Image 1: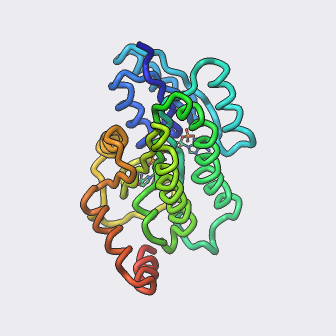
Image 2 (image 1 turned 45 degrees about the horizontal axis):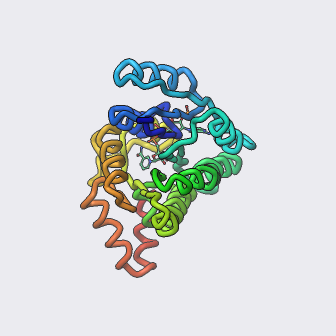
Length: 257
Ligand SMILES: NC(=O)c1ccc[n+]([C@@H]2O[C@H](COP(=O)([O-])OP(=O)(O)OC[C@H]3O[C@@H](n4cnc5c(N)ncnc54)[C@H](OP(=O)(O)O)[C@@H]3O)[C@@H](O)[C@H]2O)c1
């Protein structure tokens, strides 16, 4: 039987790399996407040696013009259209909105929102045609409320959550699953890239990217549309925000700075 093909964006580090390890252990052949090709090549070799399948690496800056379009065209031509796409690549920028570089903000929206949407749009017709597979979109617990000093990032993740939940309803009748993974803080390169200051441990922390990845894939396999990590505390956060008046939510949002 043909192996399941799983595409993972942001597979060179953090949560994406661990999600790749989980799918490889389940016997999938992978399309590993990120800008750092050396890291992808190392991971592909590790996973081939451990689990036997040949994986494909795609060195790709998803923010570059036509990057997503040409990536999908190449995969289609060469017999690598994915059954499952994990749209995980993303970054945040911490700090005062007024002090942030506008081009970096635009780049964040281009990666976290535009590239993710385009890949979902270009990859899901193949899944629908086969009546199987699905999309695992990586959002964040930041999706559930506004966050001052992380304003654009939290807004991009609110988009991913809203988009994913809506899409789940459209694609489910076609046999295609959509899950939105919403983790709290996970120790990865994310904080360095975001320029986040040192902070105290939070009740929403996850011990490692491995724990986050296992939870994301388990939730996807179980057909859960929204997968929070940590599960109960993440749910409590969302439920509290949903019940609070917006004036209180805004007060909560400004406490994140
Ligand atoms: N860590 C957290 O606390 C946390 C919490 C909630 C949600 N998340 C979300 O989880 C996802 C993964 O984050 P992470 O924590 O694993 O961060 P990470 O360790 O910084 O990994 C980010 C990944 O995205 C890739 N990437 C960045 N820019 C790219 C671009 N222009 N084109 C292609 N790939 C690009 C990076 O690869 P290259 O640099 O090699 O391109 C890397 O593989 C993100 O969407 C993030 O928002 C993270």
